[in-house]
Length: 291
Image 1: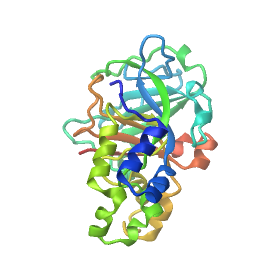
Image 2: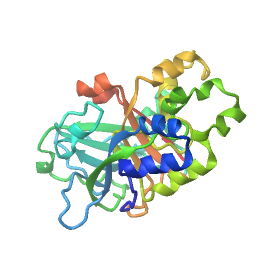
Image 3: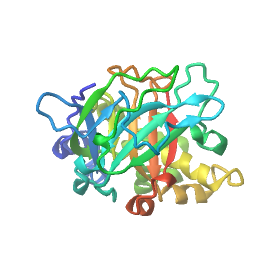
């Protein structure tokens, strides 16, 4: 799972300068955001969390279950106090741990639909109190096989805006262009997009930064879910609402753990900055995408 991504700002700046006119390259580089990239810990690396294994939960916290479908799989835990939160641009406080759960259903009988509140129980984010490492491991519910445990360390590095990002669209006015003009714009050019793809390798697990989307902007999906069925996807309020959300965490499909979210998908948790600053993790929203 270890990523070989060259995420230094100078590398991304050189990449932009290679493929974009200087003025556009500077504007694009200005959109870079710091992210805590989570990678498999090697010998001597500080451990900030773990993929898979068994969670350590206080006695008063139940293993998350989607009634009618079963217990959720434990995806990951991250120690907020071990993260370099001061290097991020989201107001994550260095308190407690975040534990992520998701119902993996290979038969696709239980699918989490961000726009359907009746399915939201299929993904859970728990904020555990400080000292979670001292809690006993919670045995997996009957019938649930835990993923292999992979300790994680962190590398803080810039994250580029995704090609479908609303931030990218707003900065370069892509929404006002025709479809042909939009995809012909230098920041959406195939050669530039392929260069960015080649720049990354390995599973994209991260805290903060720009979401690395498989399809459209995840902020749009969350905004539409929040606004409800009465608001059309093309309603300007959807894009306005999308600007209020930031990525909290994403967890990629990962060969090292056997995590495969449908067709090489990614799990995303987003939150409004004011809720994050106040520790209101119950207001985070989940969405996912696959190829």
